[in-house]
Structure formats: structure tokens, C-alpha cells
Length: 482
Image (cartoon, rainbow, N blue to C red; front, top):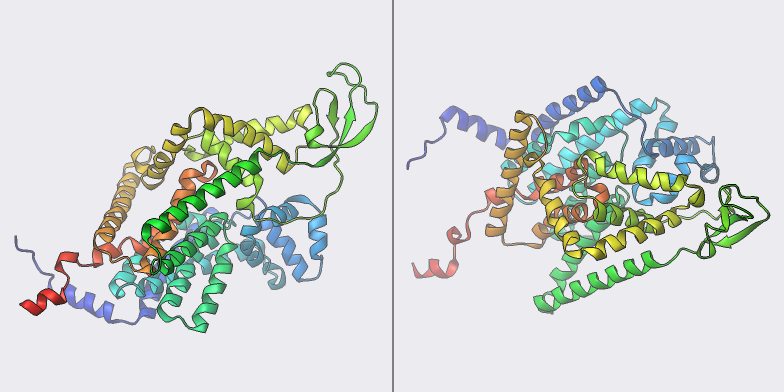
């Protein structure tokens, strides 16, 4: 069958545009992408509320201008102190919001400007990263795919770390690929900065960095060790990590708390004495928890590895499936909120509540471990192809179907045609890690969190369309005999 060639005017326009420099390409895309984001944000209004992100940023801004000290922010309690202590892997976005203090404009204006800059960084970083893998046509396609990801428009009006996380994915990938291609001291410093910055965006960024590190280590060690030995070592490490997590979750947290002793019927207790005891000695039948607990020292931890974060994931992944629109998450949250409101459990600390959650989730998993494992690929497919079950409008379904099928075909072609250079493996590890984490971890399998998967896939999956089939590549040995 004969394929009609492009008409000369269209081909000239295409060739002329691709002949332009990279800056022209990036600016031409931003002139469309940025006004649409700003228009959507101003039309619907900036949302400067959330789960402590903006509050923490504003309080840190007061530190910049000298109104408060950092110690005062922590000792004051509230959302800001809780966010800083318990969500260490998301501190970079509040730090960027804190610049609103020295600048002096409103929080809403600052969020609009900040998210606009992050959106421009996402497009520019994606384009220049794609240039390291292919030609200008491929880079332009990748940037257009980023623009077609519709959640990137409505999310720009919210002061949430996801805006920073999406912008940092291509920048992190660019820093790693740049080091692999150049391996200079400057590229190494840039990569270290990229790793540190990316690690402070969202909890799953830590897992992405770990996966990229494992890919790099495997690429180095395969020169000396067999692939079977490397896979066995990876499986053994994963098993040991899972065993350590289970051991931590099954251990009772030893915390000192104030209680009073019951004297009489449990419904109308007569409070006789007050004492400090450990959680392991607490008995609701003879003790009543006092709301005020002894003050503890300030502590910081990586929330992805915290007992509370793991317990929430276990509770969600064991007792929910798809978490449509957050309904299943809301149901579980209501259950544990009601539990905390019970007189016997009043004032539960984070570790105490985590112990209760894990003690309820682990028996559910043990009762049917096969179903628990089977839910992981089901959630994974639901995240990639939500148009198969969501009650969306027909245009929305058609767009999502075309978009996800295009990426899937590109990924399949990449697997069949790619030579799997280490740069490609690194970029494949980014969306795969996020996808596996969200599929396994029930708390974040709401559809809004899948955007990180597609930002990563946009970067590498279309490369399959630009690679020639292996059978059609030039073979020097065959050529020499012709």
C-alpha cells in the first residue's frame, strides 16, 4: 500500500519549526501552557488551605522577617509544628512558600507565581531531558504530552507539594542523565543538588531515589556478577526489609502518659489518683487516660518510613481496593477518628494510633494473603486506565483512552526496540516505582496521585515510536558480507 507523502507546504512548515533552536520551542509551548494555567487558577480561585503546607510556609516566612524564631514555631504547636516535625520529606514546598514573608505580597499571589514558575520548570525540564534521549521532534512531543496532562491545570490553584513534585521529576531525571553522559565534577554536584531537592518534595521521591540508586548499582555490578546473583540479592534485601517493617509494627510503642485510676463502675468512675505509666501497662478497665500528656522533646523523621505512615498504608491496602474519589479512605478515617474519640482511647498519640491500626490490618492480610497480593496489580491497572470504570463524560473517556493507549504502545515498542541503556533504565525506574508504590499503598491510590506516574511515562514511553526495530538496524557483520 502506498502512503501519501506530506504536502510541500506542511513539510516546509514542519522542517522550519524543527530547525528553530530549543529556546524557541520551549517558549512557544509555554506561551500556550502558562496562560491556560493562570486563567484556570484565577477563574476558580487560589486555595491557600490544606493539611498544614501553606500554614507551615507562612510561619516559616515569619521566621525570615524576624517575627518568630524557629523554636517558637515548633513549641507553639498547631498545624505548622506538626507538619514540620512529621512531614520532613515535604519541607521544600513550605520553604518556597515562606519566601512570601520577605517579599511581602499576599499568600494567594505567591502561590500563583510559585506554581506558575514550577509549571514552566516542568515543561522546560521535560524538553531538555528529552533532548538527551532523542532529537528535537521527540523533545517537542514530550513537552506537548506534559501540556496535555489535564490535572496539571487544575492543581495549579492549590498550595500543595504535588506541584513541586511533578516539576522536580524531569529535573531530577535530567540531573542523573546529565551525570551519566558527562561524568564531570560539575555534573556530579548538580546531580547531588537534584537528589536532595527531589527528596524533599513527596514521600515517594525517597523510593524513586532508592530505585534509581539500585539501577545504577546493578549496572555497575553486572560487569562482575551474574544477573541471577544480582536478582537474588535484591529479593533477599526486599525480604529483610519487609521482615524489619513487620517487626516494628508488631512491637508495642513504649510511651509515658498520664492516667487516672478508676474506682467504681466504668461508666461513672471516681478518680482517685494520677500517675504516669507506659502504654504497655495501660488497661482501659482500670485506667482513664488524661488528655494532657507529659511534654516530649521535639523529633523529626522521614514520614515515609515512620510507623504511622506505614500503618496507614497497611490499613488502606488491606481494607480497601480502589479508593474511588477517596470514599474508602474517608470511611477508614472516620472509623479511627471515632476510635480516638472513645473514652478508653482518648488522646492517642501518633505511634499509639499506628499500633492500633497495624494490629487491625495485619490479621486481615493474614486471613487472605493471596487476595492482598492480587489487589496490587488490580489497583495498578485502575490507576493507568481509570476510564474503563470511572463515570466520566464521553469526551473525557475518549481523551483518557487515546492518551493512555498511546503511552502504552510507546512503552511496548520501547521494550521491544530499546537497547536498555542505563539512562533509559533510570527514567523507566521513576514511573515504575511510583506506580508500584501507589498500587501497593492504599492511602494514596486516589486518582490525583497518578499524575506522577504519567509525568514519568511522558518522559520515556514515546521514545519507542522513535526507535527503529532491531531487525532493521545496521549490523556491521552482515554489511561486510554484502
